[in-house]
Amino acid sequence: MRRKIVAGNWKMNGSEDLVRNLVNDVSNGMASLENCVEVVIIPPALYVRDVLSLVGQREAAVATGVQNVAPWDAGAYTGEISAAMAADVGCRYALVGHSERRQLFGETDELVAEKVRKVLASGLAVIVCVGETLAEREQGVAERVVARQVRAALAEVESADWPKVIVAYEPVWAIGTGKTATAADAQAMHQAIRKELSGLGAPESDVSVLYGGSVKPDNAAELFAQPDIDGGLIGGASLIADDFLGICQAARDAVAGTDA
Image 1 (cartoon, rainbow, N blue to C red):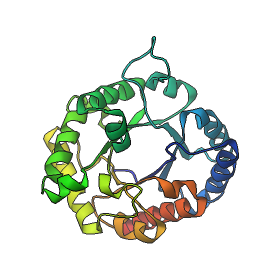
Image 2 (image 1 turned 45 degrees about the vertical axis):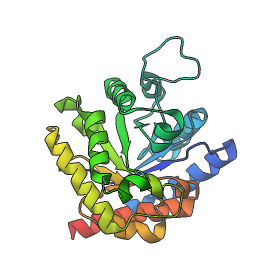
Image 3 (image 1 turned 180 degrees about the vertical axis):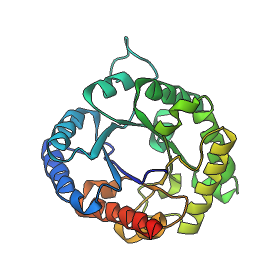
Image 4 (image 1 turned 60 degrees about the vertical axis):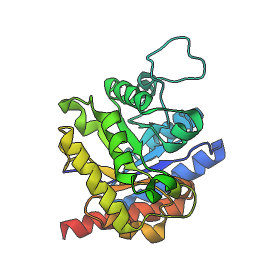
């Protein structure tokens, strides 16, 4: 049975005050989730230790991740951190292939695949981001683009590692823009992703596939009610405790609706 996951990607935002207040507020609100939703906080690397310390004290159910890892294990790569280092300090997740990394830092499908390999080898779970641009959607090639990204990133995943793989579909045109794919459009792409996972030999019904792209408390319920959407990768709303908890609650309600 696949997991319901809500992951908060803080991007390049944060301070010691924000970490302390936001993590404490999220932890205090976790009781209502009844442990049926896995919550992941993915702060900038400088604040990973602070988040780990707080969630360790307050709520073990909150996992911590890193926003990026190097395609190397160690060495003369100034400014980089390895997946093994993230695992060593207590992270449980690593984010790989976010569209901002692809667009702003020129990350290719091949580089994303190498990072996936390093994350899985470290024992961490990997959240692999895929998604099309507005131009690609308007050209009618959105599914083809996303399928290519899924195949490239996950083609070498071994059968024993599939439980550590999460896919996050983020239409590039919806990230930070206030625009959101309709629930029907998001569901169609998630279904297409599962078909691609099946072709790779994955247990596609067990792999969590998340939606990201301007998810808010007021649209989360409709998105999470779709049969192939297993939660969200949340950007801006993850920096506001009430909004983030509202999205987590929508995921909990989706679980309750499935069980009913």
